[in-house]
Length: 404
Image (cartoon, rainbow, N blue to C red; front, side, top):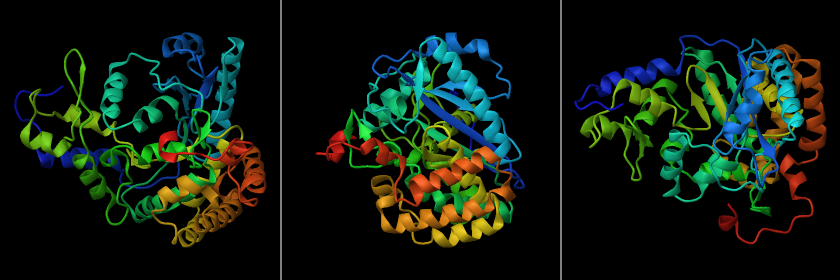
């Protein structure tokens, strides 16, 4: 909650952001988050109803957490594991239990980057999300699209303040467009093609860049993240009885310097502000890669295996760094065209080849290894992505901007 007097200085704020971003040294743990839509899409159960159905399963056998996104998406988050294989095996087992329990109550699930039939409606009254929706709505429809109808695979990897961690930070950003394109799975909005292979990424590209654009990846990552966080607009201010959305640009640094009618920010306000920042590579004690559309079983395991192989195996990382030299920063092109973009297609193919050769060295389990091979055959070598499955027998888009 804000303070009536100034208690947080810029120097202290920088130190707090710094301390929460990167540990001292890099490890090689893997964590995974997957998100599902429930069906039927036209009338999905609200979040209290989902809690009622799934709370009896907690704790899940492998410790995965069950949470819910504001549009009623079900999110499963694994514990951190020492290898890709352990993480995928554990999360898959917990996911099977959750899916079976939902099915027992006639609730289905499906995987896509955007649910093309789900309404732009909050299925929660939680003040954070109600205020967030008001903040986004003044900027256009993209924020509501992201909150209510999008789903992703998030791959979490270690990175620290050593040379390994700095390289991992840079390479994660270079890989971003490749991962967007390779797993693009959201070409439809409101049942119609948008002209984007990843309309989910298009939505992220369409919201406040101070909190959703990539963090500059050259130079010291901790310094870059500190500057990014303090320049980002404040989304809302938490008052004793409510969350007050800010509808005009108001950088956190300005809040420190000038205060607000509701008071000055505290250390707790800064910590909360960091939870409202959503760059495609987000540092918070680890690197959370947020750019991958949700894909069906077993393909989400492929996203985890390919990402960790390219970031953790030295030989694969060398090959990926070279392969992505021409696609650095092509977020828009990757989201719009997917693997139809020639340079991105070439980088995707080379990265999959590099990752495939490294799977055994990064602790990939047999089921995930088979999934990687199957995905490469079905999509990568065929010059396709999952979005192309959805686009079969669909008409050409008439208005890209209107559809998104």
